[in-house]
Structure formats: structure tokens, C-alpha cells
Length: 476
Image (cartoon, rainbow, N blue to C red):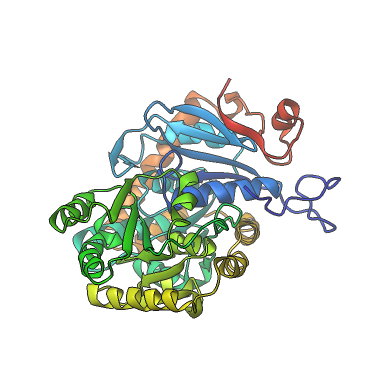
């Protein structure tokens, strides 16, 4: 990963180069979605954590166990990850009873001297649990919403009600686009003043064009996406046969896995397109760039999207992007780097034909030119700096005492839901008091800081070298 605004040699940890000392925070990132699982939230949490570490903050990640990956692992730069033994319910999200995670999370928050709990993703039950417990413990809380939701179907209504409860007394909320902010404010009935927009980013050193690429007369359209309904795979299944029939030189390269893969396999079988449609299956993050540079056009068929990192990565590799005009996508790239279409087979086919015509006529800018533009748009250094300002803001805010928190829940969340969760808050407070009686905070061992201003462990073991641990190591 490229350096993210780390201070120059001689500057102390937590010091801005040539400027006054910054406040150092001890941040706990919490989400069900983290490596080895692949996706936008996972990448966001990891990259943001690395940049915050290089800016002098202590950062750790809490997620659930993935297979045999349990306990504690250390990643690059001493990033500490707790893989907790919690049961997964659906789509990598843990089952929750709200109370079962309190002993584990309380032990981590105390042991690591956490000052800010930063939860990620509306889909993550662990993130909502962590927010609830952190408020009970009097910690500052921040939440980043990475998705868009509707308002009409049953699942959206239930999710939005949960979000209303979870965010009504959260110190600050971050959204990845202005469309996402509007959606979150409406869904959770929030004051817009406590919601900031901080977009995702891409590490340009990971997504560069391939200068050795040669023109062999074929045109390759690349799709890298989870093969699920909301990613518009049904639209893709209608596009492939129509364009393959019209353009004999056209090929499709599809990376990703999911329940909709069978739809693409049926299309490939029905139209005998085995030599022109390649399904690569699940991709490791380090392999995405090597897939992207094999193509000329990147296609995104999402039906809903808050930001869409994939189109930024594709543009950084020099591909012409064709995408549905949904959610926050129109905010991501300038008009000359993306062709926006309605979420229909006809509109997407028209957009792809326009891109093919531009490619044939040679009017598209060179991949290197596109890359040099895109790498200035979104950087993790900028994301970390803006997130740091959010932490500085919430550090100066007063944590609501229990009586005010109960009033907020009952007045903000409705007469039924509000009273139910107010009762949960009281029970959670009593459970915490019981845990503190059984094992006082003073008896919980304080962890040696592997990151941040007091990262003596990393310095002792690795000589303070940038890059730190290049592989995962089990905790001692």
C-alpha cells in the first residue's frame, strides 16, 4: 500500500509535518465484513486503518471468525485484528441477541483502551451491537453507511427501523456519497448536521494500465462484481447474447461469484458462447487488476449503489466505463470518463455500442491519460484526513448519560420500538454493571500497543520499519 500522509523522519508520532501536535485516537473498527472476505467494505476498513496508523493513531479491527481464522492476527504495520468466535447467520453477518457480544467487546474496548468505536455497514449485526455497547460504556461512536436502501419492502422497513435505533444517539455518521447521505438521513430520521460525506478511494499503485497490452482485434468487456440480484446480473444475462450476436469480435470476462452465476451459465450454454464468455469465479483482491487490464470496456449493471469502488478501479486501469445511472454512481466519475445508462438491457446495450464505436474510431483517451486523471480524484490519504477530523469532533462531544439516552430512544424511535430498545438499554447497562463487578476494569490486562504513538511492540519487533508485518502472524 502506498504511504498515506505519514510524518517525515524526525517527526514524532501524532505530529503533523511542520505543524502542531494532533490528538491521537485509539480507534476500534467493527464490522462483520473484513478479510479474508472480499468486497468494498472490507477494502475500505483495511485501507482506512492503514492510513490512520501512518497518521499516528492506534487502530484495531474487530470482526467474526472466518473458518479456521480465529483469535488475534497482525496484518501490515501491526494492524491488530480480533476474529471473534461468533456464529454467522446469513451472508457473513453474525446472529445477534444484542447481549451475547458484550463480554467480548467490553474486554477488547478496555484492554485496548479504545476511545472511538467506528462501526461499518448497515448489514453488519456486529457493527450495531458494538455501537449499542460502546454507548453503554460511555465511548464515542462513529458509523459509516456503505449502502442504499428502499423504503417500501418488508426487509427495508425492518432494517430502517433498526438503523433509526442504532443511529439516534450515535455521535457522527459518515456516508460515501451525497445520494447515500440523503438516503440515510431519510431512513434513520437524522439531523443532517451530524452526517458527513467522505467518499471511498482507490490506491492508484494497485490499479495501473498494462503498457505491454497489444491490440489483437478483439474487444473485451470486463465485469467484476458479486453475482447477486442487486448487482443487475439479470440485465447482464440479456446484454451478452444480444451484443455477441451483433459483434463477432466481442468477448466478455466476468469475475465474481454468487447465486446468479447459474443464470450466466445458462445463457452461455443456450447460445453456445463458451469461447466468448469466461466466468472466472471469485477473485482475490490482488488479482483484480490483472483481470481489469485484459479488457477495453468495464460494465457495471448495479440496480442500487452508494458509491461503487469497482468503476474507480476500472477507470484507474484505463478502461472506458459503462454503468447504470443509479444511486451515487453519477457523482463518482466525470462525464468524459463514464457512459451512464438507465438500468435496462436496451439502454446498457446502447451505451456499450457507443463505447465500442469510440474504441474503434480511436477517440478514447489513452489508458495512461485516464489513469493519471483518476489517481488524483480519490486518495486514501484524503479519506484518512477527513475521517480524522470526524474523530476530533466527536472527541469533544459529551457522551449522553443513561437517562438522556433513554429519553432519546423513546422520543426518537416511536412508542413501541423506542420503549423496547430503552428496556434493552437498561438491561445492557445492568449486564455491564454485573460484568464490572465480576471482573473490574482494573483487572483486565492492558494490551501493548502495536500501532499508534505508543507502538513500542512494532518498533521493538520490526525496528520501526515502514510496512511492518508483511504476513499474518498469530498472537503470542
